[in-house]
Amino acid sequence: MTRPNQFAYSTAITLLLASLATAQSYTITDVGTLPGGVYSDALGINAAGHVVGCSDAVNQCNSNISGDAFFWTSGGIQQLPPRPGSSFPTIAHALNDFDQIVGESGSRAVAWTKKNHLEVLGGFGGPSAAYGTNNRGEVVGYSNSGSPNYYDLAFFWSAGLGAINLGAIHGGHYSSAFGVNSSSEVVGVAGFGIQGSDHAFFWTLLGGMQDLVTLPGGGR
Image 1 (cartoon, rainbow, N blue to C red):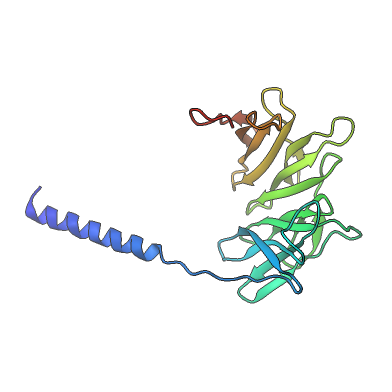
Image 2 (cartoon, rainbow, N blue to C red):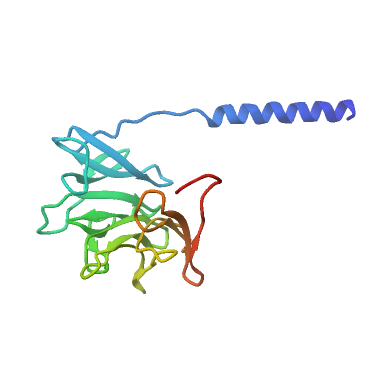
């Protein structure tokens, strides 16, 4: 390597390291709790830095016990309305860059808009929850199948298609979807719902569910 090239190479490395050092500067912001709350969980964030989650007045948020969904911006924290007539917890799990929020309220998968309008998403008959959404407004999560089997199964929801059952893998009867990108590609976990039997999956509308198996030696 010639001396000029050595100089250029060293300069590039120095600039790269300086850039990385700058990129690793962080600040921590306490989003607080809803009025009367003593605990909060931040579960989702978008490109604008807006945050959603759950706040509780007693202890840790729990989808079976207690919790109130919140939406936070630099202007402060606000409670998201629960499903009318329900006494079950409300939790916001994710949001997209348009501040469309998804989660669960009264044991049902729901979505909120910026104006706090709540919509109950279709499921398969039993309890459900929404865990992910993309900038197209598509939503993923799980829904219980209801009678007679009562299986928890992953769903993909869109305004045009409603809720699609994503099924499971290898003859299993359990799945849950956690994320969806802007190409409508979905990821989650599926199997029998037993420790060591479940695998990550990748799903597309045309290709269906693909088993992502495990790392060498992995049982799940």
